[in-house]
Image 1 (cartoon, helix red, strand yellow):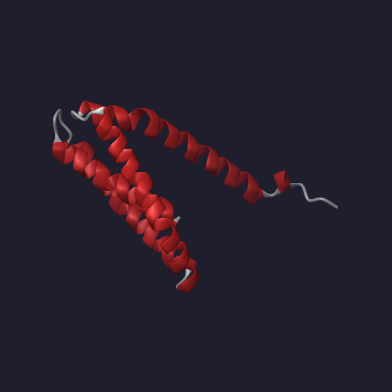
Image 2 (cartoon, rainbow, N blue to C red):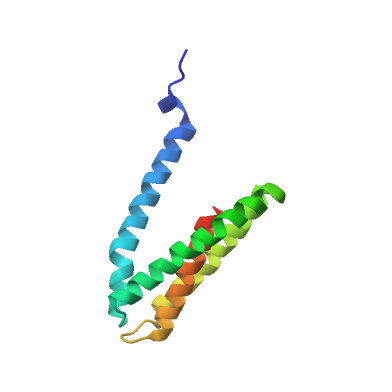
Amino acid sequence: TAVDPWKNENVRFGLAATAFYALGTGLYQMTVLPSFILDVGGSNFDVGLAEGLQGFTQMVSAFPAGYMADKVSRRACIRVGAGTQLVGGICLLCAVHVAEPGSTHAFVLLSAALCLQGVCDGIM
């Protein structure tokens, strides 16, 4: 007999978590992030560069993270990813704190935060 996946609590929670993650990421990356970069004096090129750095670091870190998860342990890789996410979040908060029109520091911190987010996405 076929098992109904909708009766499994883990499936329901996993789908809900994925939906909230996608909603938050979509709102952040499609509206808030470009507006923030443009408000601190960035251009459309800067928006693309910052988001491209995130994608590039995700691509570069995904295969080594998978290899390390197989060779060392998944738990260690998840902890490294969580630590990376924490440092990236601190960079993002610092970028928002120092942000003012024409602020290069805010853009550099934001780019660093996005790079760390890309590494975290590659790991986790």
